[in-house]
Length: 163
Image (cartoon, rainbow, N blue to C red; front, side, top):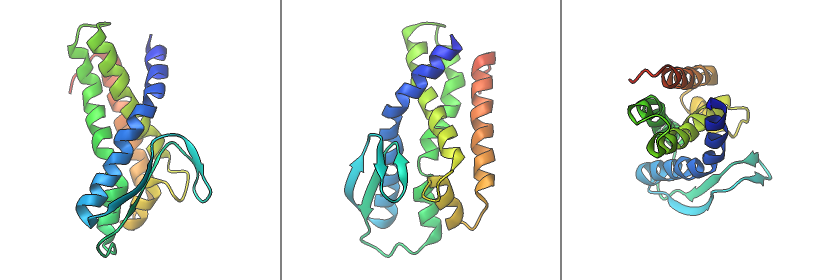
């Protein structure tokens, strides 16, 4: 049964891409008064960055030279991911195998998938690498933290522990 939830969460990841990309845009809009240029909420190949599940492009209306602001924009999707990590074990409050339990588990499971995928940071264009670079920190700090949060969340969910 856990394998079915994992597969469904990977498929729901395409819905979570919208949350992920909108998080980037909202942070850029708030910090830089950025204007939306283009948002791609589907898998595609970028000529420069390679394969992407989604992408958002925006134009700055203010000087974007503050490194911590760039880090906030890069790490903005971590906020809904962390909320998903807390919500996954909380799904155990619902009746097991009820529609509410299944929907919550699958939807927030997609946030866990995003947290794991984002923690890989394989590309120099990845959010993790850009954010770590903006803060002059090793990406490994953010990789390890992301994976630990995901593992703790899934373990708590499987064991029935609620945060």
